[in-house]
Image (cartoon, rainbow, N blue to C red; front, side, top):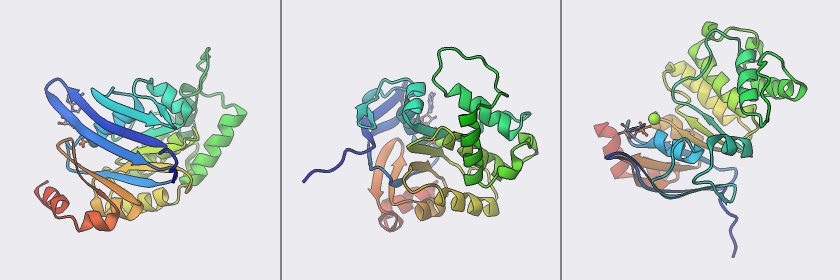
Length: 249
Ligand SMILES: Nc1ncnc2c1ncn2[C@@H]1O[C@H](COP(=O)(O)OP(=O)(O)O)[C@@H](O)[C@H]1O
Ligand SMILES: [Mg+2]
């Protein structure tokens, strides 16, 4: 029996910041095309785990394999170019610019090029095609020329995902895509994430456990940097330790 290499393998990773152990011996094997949620209370180490995967922080101990290669020390740009997409818990949008301008800047920043002419408003053919398709997928095509500050919070979070999709990632990390949204906007965001291409591998961080469990096949639960449970949504729902952690948070 052979099993395919996971597309993402976090292998016993620990991340320390001085005396703080933010991630403590976490292992995660993500198969191609699967959808995972990482859940847990504030401060559990979820965002730091994403940073270790994306290369924004280096694991103090352990390894991160992506696409079958050891990328523990690879630069974030290199991982992005190879096919890792990511959105952030806190918005990185340029509020005074339009949707299209934000996407063009992001696309150019992530394009491997020895010479950046830095003319973000010049949209080249392939960039235009990707922008159009990503905006369609997130149902914000009508906002292409809207200034970001005039969009609803929900639309802005959709734009952040569209920007990540425009780089055609194979693995997409979403850090709390529904953070700060109203209940109605959260339902829309859930449907949008659900409608993303099935061959895209997704790992999402979501504080709202019910939304998270409806979206994924597998769940990792962190508390104080440590894995306290891993399983399918039903197993996580009925796990007493997980319920205790959520009740005290
Ligand atoms: N750059 C940093 N320097 C020091 N401590 C940090 C840093 N980033 C995160 N931490 C700490 O690591 C722990 C985990 O944080 P974080 O990964 O943001 O948790 P979560 O995303 O689950 O809320 C927290 O105690 C946080 O204060
Ligand atoms: Mg976080």
